Length: 276
Image (tube, rainbow, N blue to C red):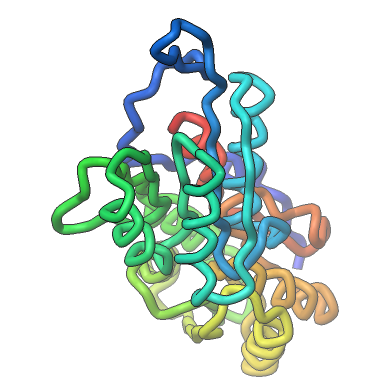
């Protein structure tokens, strides 16, 4: 296949329905004595870790940019398993953070619990909201189906086998937003294109991502879109080895396989975190 990188589409920025914390652009507070106090912002990453080349890493890059440009003090805690979320949030509360950011859908219950326990602390939740949002919690949401639709159009038009794949981390609404946007794009481009879908039930299992991608390739998929954090690293490795094509997610993932990552559905979580 003679694919060209579609740079214009890979730089598409889709940020929608974003609610921002009402902070000043200046990263300091004034205490009762009139002295300036640096704003302290903590982040709890989900199990994918801040080097997942995807969702968490993009969030961490946004927080680092805020540290550089706004002069805030930052701290990140990585979670090895979901059972650590509550304790990691508690640690950041104990460290005196003014704002604590939870990265991902899976942290929603624990953010809400701690927001109720600590009403004087501000919290932000990336990629999820509530029917009744606590007064000290702000949600940061994205219209991911739009970027996914665009990459689906590309996959449907450019697949030579007329067989493409989608690998999701978990079967949850935020991942299905990517899935259904992609499916709509593929079917719009080529209604006769076969679309394979599977979930890895993980955001961190690179080996599982690689195994699923290999299976899809053996079933004739020649382009695979992966929305699942660090499972994408393993999937892209399999795609590279088979000389097929991947579509990245959240951030530009072309550095993982420059000749095999066709484009990326860029979410710009970094901008969402920075603006918050």
